[in-house]
Image 1 (cartoon, rainbow, N blue to C red):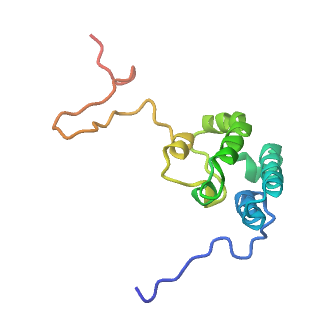
Image 2: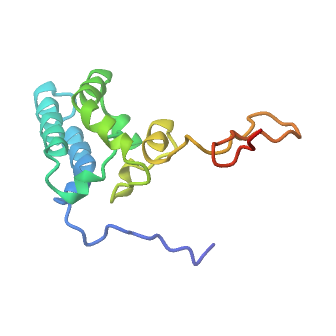
Image 3: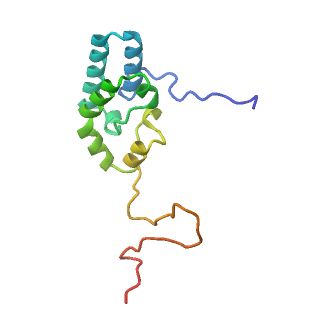
Length: 145
C-alpha cells in the first residue's frame, strides 16, 4: 500500500470550467455561511449557468446534486434546485449512455444510475435466490407457435 498514489484528474484545470459549477457553488455556499441572501445569489448563479446549456460540458450533465453539495444545501435550497432544473433533468435522463465530463455527478444513487443507464428491454435478473432463470421474451427471440 505504500506505493499508492493519489490521482488528481483535474489538476491544472481552471476552476472556471463549466463542468466545475457544483464545486464553485459549494465554495460560495461555504463562504456565505448561514447568510440567506448570498446563499440564494450563489444558487441562482449556479442554476442559471446550468440552464444556459451553451457549453458542451453542460450538455452532458444529468442535473443530479453531488453528495458533497447535497450535504450543505438546506432542504429549501435542495427543493429549489430540483424544481428549477427539473425540465433539464428530464431531458438529460432521455440520453442514455451519455456521461458527464466530470466525476462530481457520478454516484451509485438510483437517480443518477437511471439517468445514464438503459434498464428496459433486457433480461430480468431475479432479486431473490433460486435456480430458475427469468428473462423477458423479446419479439426477436421468442419462439413462434
